[in-house]
Image (cartoon, rainbow, N blue to C red):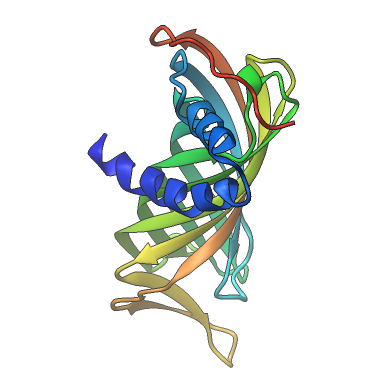
Length: 230
């Protein structure tokens, strides 16, 4: 839980001043009450379809599948725990596999209203553990692999088909920390595998389409807060 506090507090520090700007004290109090009202601990399970767009082109776009669970903490704050496996074809001569296991804290920009609001946009921040492996095609192809961690920032939106079931579209930037393994296309058309030490800002963009269903409530809510946002 302590590891989740930093992204949550960071999002609140960024967003709350903007929400409060130009509002009187009663409105600010209402906004805070609405944001931090305790909910009934909605627990959701879902599946994810990933399209992995690497920023260090000309790598090929990767596609993959994953699963995730959400635990809603308060009215405007949700958490998501996920695992993804993504495959990419590199130049037709090698293939890459990425495995991501991590979590995100999601801040709803509008009051979800018990997820009766059809469109619920959100910002999210989080962390994941990464495994990357690249293998040359062929029976005895050369391979390289590395493990690292990454931090993430994303923007997305739920479409709530019912209060229990939603489809979400998310665009995420995954910023790798530490070493990286890469493939390079040589002028003669061959591909070589290289290690990048302390790659630093190495990362990629992901587009995620997911579907989740709320299967149970983990705790009883406090008295619901009033709605402020139209």
